Length: 379
Image (cartoon, rainbow, N blue to C red; front, side, top):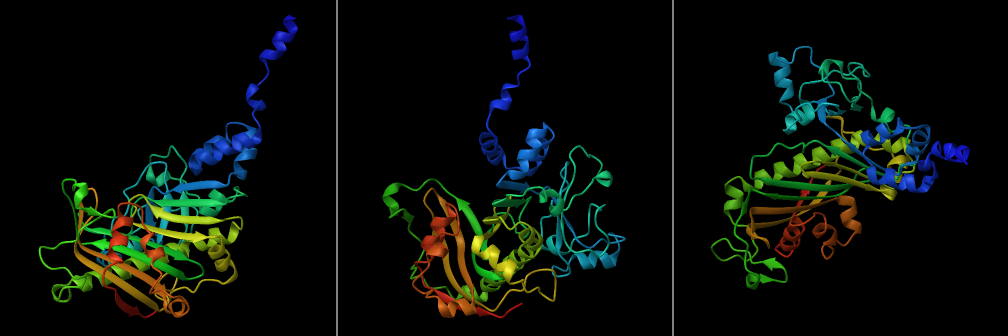
């Protein structure tokens, strides 16, 4: 009897949990660093983690791909101001290094952390640093290929940057969402020159869940003449081009991961600020594998095709809950070739559902206003 009790004390009851239940837990965890720690718990965990289907990779820092011998020299400083000079690298650090804030740093800033796994002049790549390294000079980096190579069944992959690439002033709103296959499929941009939070508006002033638009005068949905003369239109063009560059740069960096992980059903590359979201579904992922992307000759990003754009503008847009967008602008973009095939004039559902609330409501309100059409050449 005592022998039986003694043998029972050595039974690991955790082993009675089926693999399917453990995989469910691992998929809920998702975070690649946490899953890496799980791998060292036991041989069983080590064998199960590679079967995880849902993986989340959070980036702590971004550095440029080109390493300057002297970042303080005038020539290198001038180079860092050129937003089209080069591309960036994702770095996953055990300790957070100051993240980039502006488009110039996104595309051309000096490298802050040296890579032990890459060589000068190598192409842009992702790096993951081992936890516990407090000295930047001693950080060990791992490429995304190394980080994800043991995940054999990844279906849903989410990569999150520490912040948006586009440096904007405080109070300015700029959000974008882009869908890609082998090239840009569509892009929606929502911007506002300022965001004001007022007291909550009473329900009796709301119609069908929307607040009335007012700029202190008659608003017939048209763009006021001052929009063209005070730099408003120029600013929106800068927003549009910058967002497209950021989206195409993200897309370019994803191609090695997409090529090596053929089980992917959905891929999202976003940022902690919620500024930009790049999405690819299963069909779009397969399209990229079959039809290689066309790289821009100017920098390491996917070439943006000729585009047709539709623009909606409201000088003053009030949202339920008291948020007011001043100079609210919505831009819907599709390649010119697609615009010929698809009936875009009547179908704006993909535009109005591009953003989460309260910005989804703003998009729905804006598409009801007068539409302005623009075109842009490939770049």
